Length: 208
Figure 1 (spheres, helix red, strand yellow):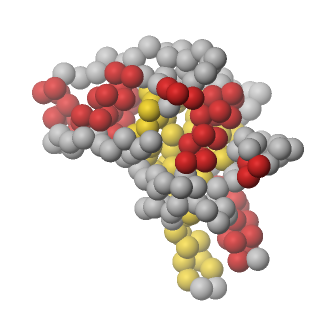
Figure 2 (cartoon, one colour):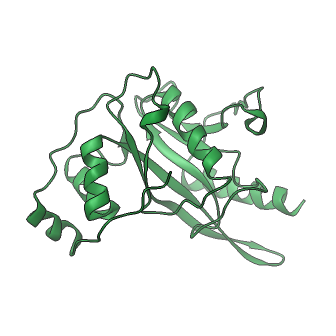
Figure 3 (spheres, helix red, strand yellow):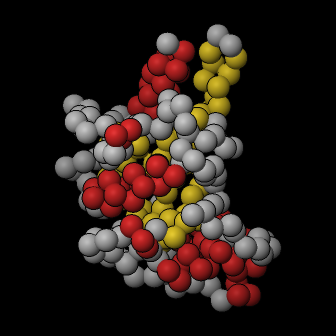
């Protein structure tokens, strides 16, 4: 009952701050726990080219490995529903055995399959963070944003850190979207990367 109440409060907060989510909210008949895809709450489905997707199976999962955001779900802004269904679901399965935090990176090329996509990696950043007041105190909750990136961008994030790549994506008007068929952005030379980040953050561990 505690987790159900917490999830209800988290959903209400997200519906107000991120949404409102599209209605009716439809859940997949084949559950995530038995091999199905994650369920997703959406904003803009059927109306916008880039739709906001928020997963909705991990927050209350008893195997979720909590990190800096506490209990969390994934959020992505993408132009392809199948990419979210395939890639984010696979990341979600790993989240039951490994901790994911903002500024992590991940090579997702083994999961691309027959998807037509120029994106081969994902970077993670804090998408939303809040504390929900409960009887036993405040619960840290959040959304971990997933942004699809090309191989050169993934390598850049490894060398200079996710925040530097995020700044470059913003300059190129790509952030925060995951656009499957886009080309790599023009990445700054090494000297410019110092200016983007203030310093070189060093290598970021690859989450696999």
